[in-house]
Image 1 (cartoon, rainbow, N blue to C red):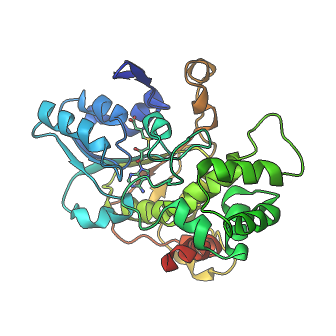
Image 2 (image 1 turned 45 degrees about the horizontal axis):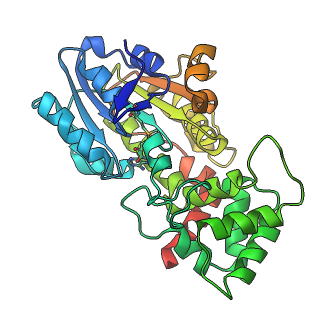
Length: 336
Ligand SMILES: C[S@@+](CC[C@H](N)C(=O)[O-])C[C@H]1O[C@@H](n2cnc3c(N)ncnc32)[C@H](O)[C@@H]1O
């Protein structure tokens, strides 16, 4: 199995590829949904197995260029959709033999390098951060939200200790000029009380803004709920996360649908629910030392998976209530 794909002389490393293929078992055939098609790393590996079909989704229209090439190569076995995975229910998949749904969350190397997208604090481009199919940009948020609202985003989505000071300085600065990416970098650097020499001063705030702009919390929760519904008996739901908020959501959801005990003390009725999923491993699968050496950004990846035990569309989970405090913050974007 090749671990890399070469795209215009840039190497793309699909993270935990061998491990993903081993848990979803495409050698038995069936339909697979690649919810984060990206550069098609997972999809192309699945399609190497006969009797498989893949539907690849990506909110970034640029992924469609590779998507079209894969469609040409596998005309009856692959379909690309420029769609957010929160809209998985629009695909009318109830009668498909769905044997695997995979998520590889976060951003591809190509997106991080794309100046137009402005996802990284190294970007000299616009303060954008939109992955695709968004309603507002980071520029809209930073230049329009109230100080307390910006503080909540930085604190809860980035776990940024200096959220209060950074948001105060953002609001002060924007009175004299519109803030762009490098402007924001300077504000954050000047607001940090303690320098951390291991991570860049902007890492947490930029993570927070990307989550907010792309509504990553509700995207993930909706995506998990719909994919657990459409999977058929014996099918696998596999998710690769990159930061602690994503992992907390996946871990909680997986527990809530694979254990008979109530996860939340507020939901006693979950005690009688039917258990439809099996969590084979309690601990996540992480990249090998070799993979981290070859592709250092993979070091924070965690793969969790579940196997569906029965065909059923009725999934009970209190996941929305559990993370309602985060969804509330995301909803601040509705006014932008
Ligand atoms: C880490 S990359 C996936 C790489 C892919 N596994 C591969 O091997 O090429 C993540 C991709 O997910 C897409 N994405 C992120 N959130 C999404 C969402 N809510 N709906 C659809 N696509 C999403 C991003 O645009 C990006 O292309």
